[in-house]
Length: 64
Image (tube, rainbow, N blue to C red; front, side):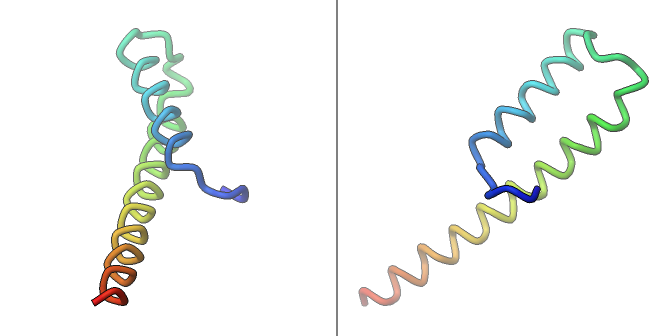
């Protein structure tokens, strides 16, 4: 992800891929690459949440 990471866009892409899988509209030849993409997006989302949590905690600690 060379562009600035967007949590909302990542979630939307994950949901789109899951919908393709659930609706059986995903070609079996693409399944592996799509699952890998979802795993990468989930990892990035988790990191974004962790980073944001730490940033908020640091800001709150500065207030005290």
